[in-house]
Length: 578
Image (cartoon, rainbow, N blue to C red; front, side, top):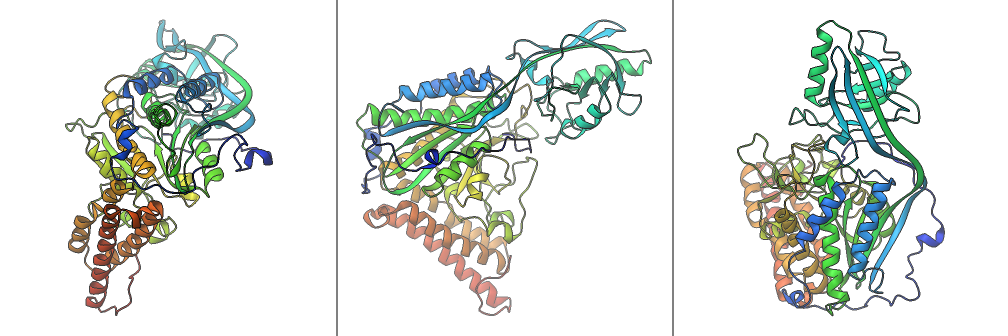
């Protein structure tokens, strides 16, 4: 999960033919009618669990590749995903579509091959290096950095203490902001500290964060240091003797297309559901884990159709993988008229805890903007990530009210874990869907001590097969219920938190504002859920009963709103601005 601003290529204008929503002639039309089956019926065709062992193997494959949009490791990763999905019937069965969408026809791509940083004087000492690009210290070469034509031997100076021209500069500040200044000053090498980043201090002295610099074929080589390497260099400088470094870096710059993958299980007329996972970034947890679960879900349900005799679902399911934010924007643009919900999978394999830690990893679902940004009730605190959502009503009033986050929390808990939702923060692949008016939520795990560093490599403490299985099981429950059943499982999950939540809101938030804001929101969210469930609301007693629970909670909140408003002397107007 990047959650940080970064330069991204502008999308090129696509030919009209690529934008046409019409299916190819050999693809039969999706079913026109909804078939309502009782909860549990989907088990006739589908297992409850993804193949988590196979998903972990995909994490390992991706983790060995430094995946930047369009570079060779990224292309190899897309090829592997396509091969797996084709094995499940996508692209060979007319009911299972598989296609690549081009985001940029002619982008500049970047791939790190090797780098080294060593002290030549006063005494030789190797500090950091990697070769090949799957070595643990591969993040030492900042994304976008130029390479060298051969080893450079340069004097080391501290930023602001000497003329940087032709030297290696131990820089102050973050690379995203300071690189251009050092380039303009003629520095030969820019060395950036581990803790000089928006994400804050790294968790380990040997961790090397990754980051970006806006460089071309010229400019200083940009290296990121571990905290221990930075400490060692400062020790040498403070001894007062000249310090000479030898620096080498090899990168591959090419030009070529940047593509994303779109797989679709074609279904009936109800609003579609999409799962998105970004492929770029050189991490196992961030985000090979999300890609692996998305692929495993597509394989599970694709095989059930292709090999298991399952009928077409009542709605289409989409699975998209590509560059962070960009691929979600493309999918939202192409599919906005057909989608009901979108789920972003980003950092989903890390085990929870340990509880003894100062900041234990939590299993989280990030909500869309809603009144929890001001009145949390039983909703968990923020994730501890960089940003927090605006608490003003103007923020959440622009988002489509939806119970998607509550559904995911309940079904993920039933899949085996202590999941909780938290107020909106932004910064991942759910945001473009929200911007397009499509209800969306983010499934993720945070805090993460390996976040955006060289420590994010495959291993049981970073990505757990059991935790991949847990996320897959929860998401598969959503797909089965809304694809082949009456939606009662999803409706029940949507209703589950609200009896207790209404009581908490009534007790903990005196005055009308909270009850009125949540009442308005819940009424609209219930309408949105009814639209998602479609004809099952009338055809299935279990689904109708669960939806009635949601509406009952909205009525209780409305009554509390009215009581509090009258009690506060504000008259009978229902509302009370937030």
